[in-house]
Length: 361
Image 1 (tube, rainbow, N blue to C red):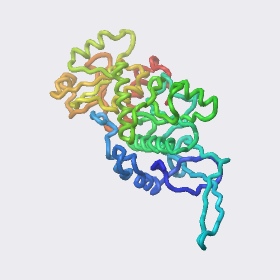
Image 2: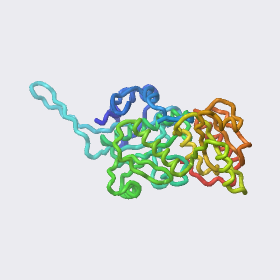
Image 3: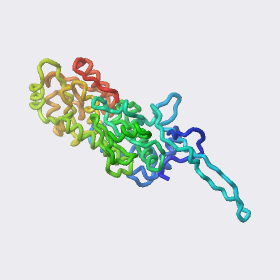
Image 4: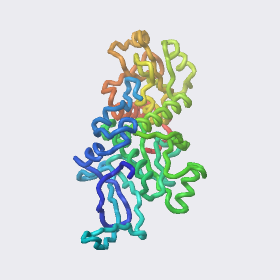
């Protein structure tokens, strides 16, 4: 049931861990039904990776363990009692699960899928770097929980691979909260509300938890839902502002406090939509002291000419105290980790006294 992880016969213990590696990792996705391509048919993991653009800075876009290993370790654990009885010379085998051994879901720390096990002590708050998709589960691996765990692992694995296995560069993070037991359940209810059925997905931005109430059948739909929430949060908090002229940039600097260094991060692009990657970067570095992240959807490249940016679009630059002092990002614009490191170096160089404390989550 559940169209999830195949393979049984795991022995020992009461926890079901999730683990797949090498060929088994891809085989699992190849054989999985109902979660690729919007909920219809399986498709390979490679197909899943190419099915939708997780977003780069160009615009648009809709577990690492020592010695190898895998994202989630799954052991389907059942005790069976087999008693042969003969009917008409044929042996009949009866299989019964042991009622004393419940099957539990466990996401191990630093699993290769990048799904982060979290609880009350480490739950994201307003200072956390990343936005989150959170899977709240009751610990028991029933059919619904397994299906949602499959979706969470697929999505996190894809995001992590797109980020070149740099967890800090993921567009958003994926976490799992175990709600088993009275104390844990009380915490989960404080985040989800009393009426929310568990297991459930929720997004977390700025420490605010919002239950995903739409029925999302596939990884793409789940990804698009979270990125829509990310883009909304960035717009609502005015983390990215649109600019179309040099006069707007000058106005931003004139309104800024004069007793500190002011930096505007500017993306020059000819695309019509804010990319999830750029939104994610603005969100992750919102506590670093920059005046604002901005973007110019400059199809005629007029602003680029005014700033003496003559290279092809897109271009990412930092304007320091005025529009005349420009530092250009020279790396790959598809490498979120490299861009994030560049932004971090700017903050450390110019804004080290203004950077507020941010948790690395």
